Image (cartoon, rainbow over all chains, first blue to last red; front, side):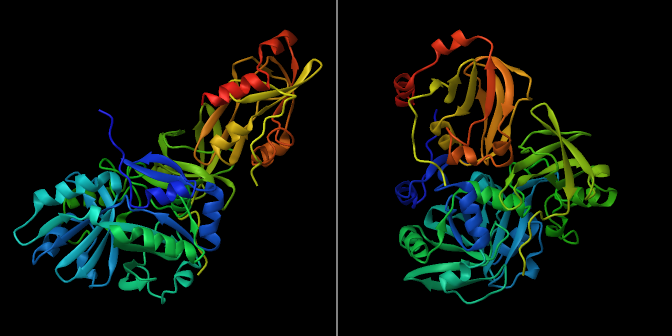
Length: 350
Length: 131
């Protein structure tokens, strides 16, 4: 049976703007409006806006909400005061990554998790099965829309006050009540605006009216790859552990959570493979699934609009994971030279 | 800036959205506006080696945009005389000028009679209408 693609509350606006719509994680989403490279550059130079309403939102509330999440998420929730957020992982018994997500502490006993679109049901069921008395897990994805405004001028264009990364606050933006989250997936300053689904159109129009450029998932992918943010399903997944993926910093190994023993083991003996970032030395564009000589594989690859060369991430044996090491990528039968670089490939100037 | 949609009537076309400009026993090859637009801004051109041979209806190279890879299909057979190095260095020229500066390779035809099998503008427009 053909699966019906879901549409965000902004679907008609994307179509009216001339966006090219593609299926993504069960959703019909804009991949580009005018062009991936132009949109990418708008975010690096000024400000761009992305409809990311396909992402899932789970709310966990109750006196035992903290206990449930502290035992299922890798990062330490005790470091999170109300008004703060953290990047964290939902892990399985093998220490694999069920999903990567951002946890927001709304109140002492109330948390919001923003999770990947294609994993949101898995995550919901995962937490629902482990629900404790006094920790109510609700899927509130349909109630909200999420709009990411990213770029060096994003905050200024929205007229928002400065705030630290990974904090959030309530605000009214051009008449729309929003939760302003100082988070993002582009490597730039900016925020993600959470609003009620029925207000999404008004908010989107207001953001565009402030001179922010609409950007599709194509630019979102090249931006996140330059910033070396992993994409779940490509770079990380249920069969990859956080240590090999370079996400050890998200794991509080001094607390107990699902799969922590396995993660401690990998950490203690050192991972056999590591997720590295690389740039092409020879002209070629690496793509997901291409073999890397010596026993590795490209997990994400693209042309970098900022560097104007091919870039990527992939797992390689630890002995060839050091920055500076030359790699050979098999580009559809053609060996092409690349070099391991320190992550991230792109870092904004402060 | 991407070019506006156009299809010159002095070219021969192949249904895989390639064009050929015939000049005696030589031809210059490229991709049509439709192909360039469908791919989006080109960021890579993988050309054949000068001196190699290309065969009608076979792949002779690749072009890539940020999101997609596309094989280049030779509309005619022959020997590669020249590769457009400007496009190798700046593939977006294809989007800006697909029939002029954005040409891809020049070949010497091994069988000039193959030209008769190509599409003229009207026939190619039929192909486009069916997309």
